[in-house]
Amino acid sequence: MKKRLVLIATAILFVLVNVFLYVTVTRRLANNFSGTGQLKMVDVSLFLPFEESSKLARTGSSLKFTADEDLPVLDGAAALVPVYASVIDSCYPEGTVTYEGGKFSDDNYYGENFAPDSVMQYQNTVRGFDALVDGKVDLFFTAHPSKDQLASAKEKGVELEIVPVGLEAFVFFVNKNNPVDGLSSDQIRAIYKGEIKNWKEVGGPNKLIDPLTRIKGSGSQTMMDKFMEGDMLSARDPLSIFGAGIGYSFRYYLSGMVADDNVKMLAVDGVYPDEENVRNGSYPISVNFYVVYRKDNGNENVRRLVDWLLSGEGQRLIEACGYVGLPEEKPAA
Amino acid sequence: MSRRRFFTILIIIAVIGLLITVAHSVFIYFAYRNSSIIQFIARELWL
Image 1 (tube, rainbow over the protein chains, first blue to last red):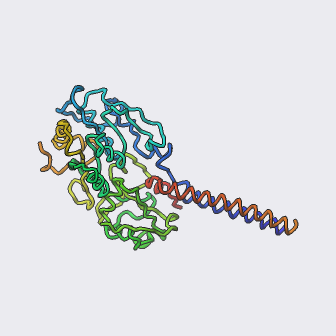
Image 2 (image 1 turned 45 degrees about the vertical axis):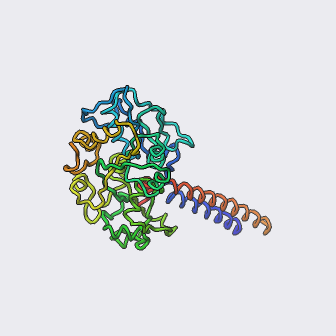
């Protein structure tokens, strides 16, 4: 009888360990490279130009390209899909976007793609930037390119124009049930350096902090590297995976596109990252987002489009997309 | 149950349990690296 109990107890022990792992970790994983994970990426089909039901900003444009012109091909980071899709919708002729997406494959991690001759492409930050450098894309909408990306372009002998066209906030977020509503910049840096390891040290519950990071070369990781001034945590406590996480992203991507009610943005240095605080500069980590193009790009419509983005019309469109335009003295016209 | 039979069954249970746990942990290791951090935080368990 005793032996039987030992056998049953051993089996139950393994079951409990795996149930614990599932509840605390596995259940929370949403793999980017799967069909399910695709849901958390941008569903580009919601932002297709010239579709009546698309979630695009339509504020009007005096710049109207015609089909017989050399039309710039646009690509960009996930968070900026609504912006450049709205630009195409406003300035390009119908019939220039061919969407064939939705099929997940090893070569198409995001399950989204466009025909090669489509003026709209979506390859996200890492692959899209390479496509720009390789001359397959004319204009790339992005957070500031990373040092590695700039070095890679330089190595290929490609000079880039990097033009700020709008403002965005770099935000930190936690689960909505986390009682911590704000952190100072120094506290955030200390967390990501591994100096603060428990939420109780910043006024929260007695739970380990799980400081989550993003893939190298992504827009938010590049911004985080800049925020940390290169002093980023290299290895973290493995047990922190069972704690409560903190992550970072861009404001509109988090609150406007993914819009998951189970996470909340944190105030930084006492300032919440709402639109007004980003615009007036009181939120401490407001950053520009950019359009990038090759200096040797001979297509004059590229520069026309950049000028339009900086104009009052372009800035209105950017604001209507949910972002913040450049301060008023910046727009060219 | 004989001592020999007991240990045989115990070892089988332990090996199967360990294999499942190791496979589960390996899956976590790779999936965690590619997981959406927003979803990972959104699905946290707060009791």
